[in-house]
Image (tube, rainbow, N blue to C red):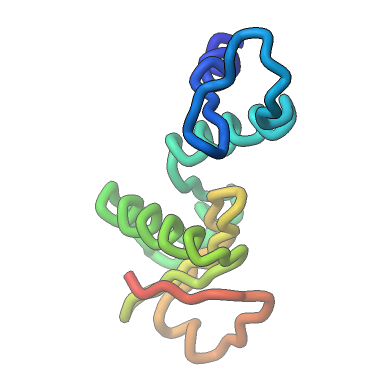
Length: 128
């Protein structure tokens, strides 16, 4: 509750002023504040791999390094800014399908497999 009340206390109005105590000026709804808090916490945790994606990465010899995680996080954030929901993040050797709203890698693919596959329901691409 402290995080939510901290958000409410720091809430500002559209004109940049803080609402006066007891004022009737509108602020965001509790639901919107709660959702913003949950999204901020999720982004702070960073992108994560689903169980399926971890299994595929292991099977395909893809090593998940901190540098790779940083690249995926950066790519996901750039795609999120553009409003993308499902992206393919790729370099010359591998690709990852990422669900942006959930900050979750869905699957991992090697270069050889990219030649044989068609990717559907993707609304963005990010080059790592």
